[in-house]
Image (cartoon, rainbow, N blue to C red; front, side, top):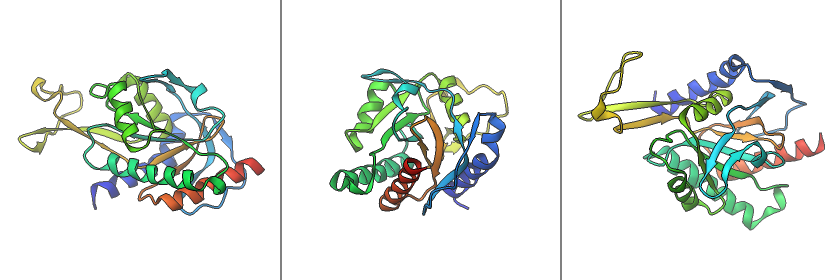
Length: 228
């Protein structure tokens, strides 16, 4: 089983079990919209920790997601593979929306949330996210705030430290050697999380992602929301 497959399995378990364990307030959903790849939550979920920072806007909080659809992706700017791939796919989707907006009632806001605030400054993060599409927002916060947001949404990630090219096994509670504090990669899921205009977790797009399929699913979800 590949790393991405393992992460996807962990994420599915988090969606089915972890969100309920987090104790987030839930709201019953109506008959779900027909989708091709999006996993619609049986009950929309409130999210915690929406107290992030943006390089130009300053605070990025609930007011910035209420009243519109938002796609959140969790990663970090030094990610060697998953983040570039997923941000490119979302950028392709945004370009498709720009060329023909008739299919989608409202273009989504794409928010890249860094889980590595120790190395990702808000300025560098916005430059990184904006490279893929000028509308993309890069945000982060202190690690406990990011962790709280991630837990409330069932997002999985973990740091992996390396010594001499090999992953270093650390026992629970064991301190990271000082010379390795900045020598790590972050394993994280490639899922994309959809917040609805009520700022609640509404759906999860599991990898692999296809821009055209995501666009059709977004249109179906938005139309269902509007008509329900």
